[in-house]
Length: 107
Image 1 (cartoon, helix red, strand yellow):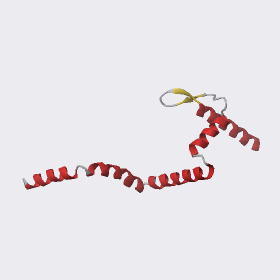
Image 2 (cartoon, one colour):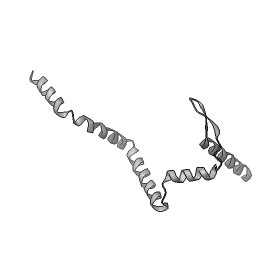
Image 3 (tube, one colour):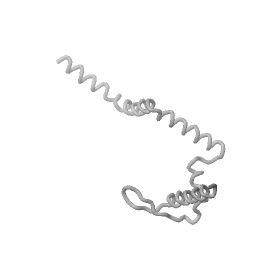
Image 4 (cartoon, one colour):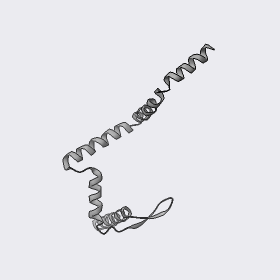
């Protein structure tokens, strides 16, 4: 009876701790496999780029996409679920063709 009382009391008193432990679990687990290092490095680089140029990495990516595909052409992409048309696929395929032609010209 005493064990049951202690167990129920501890569950009642420690129930608020479960929420904070859930958040700590992801950061503690991430530290073991390097995700915390990767995240901090990514944040540092992003901050440095923003401080140096005034634009974040995503803004640079958007500018590059507008420069590489000013007509907003779309190219079909194959995914595992469905076939879609995307501007990114057009840009990637265009870059692949350019890279292949440069490699062939070196030969």
